Image (cartoon, rainbow, N blue to C red; front, side):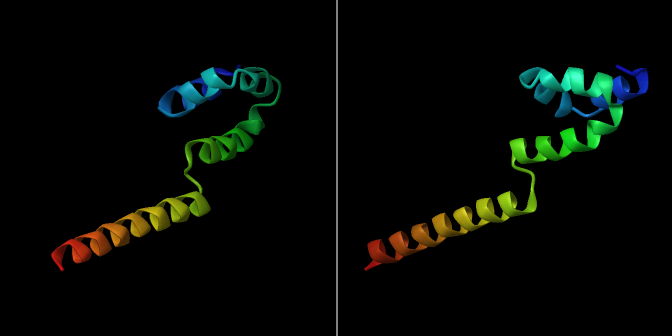
Length: 77
């Protein structure tokens, strides 16, 4: 692996555990260092950092808050 690529991976705290869990990326990055972009995209999906995943998480949280408000309103009566 190229030293500059290795330093880049070490500088990102999420990349190291991801690569350890998915060791096939060692081979891919050694052969083609430009595939780091592809790895970062897969890493975002894996950690739930994509926009659709964030929206789904937010919608779930709003649904839970709404349920608590309804529960508090029913207990008030």
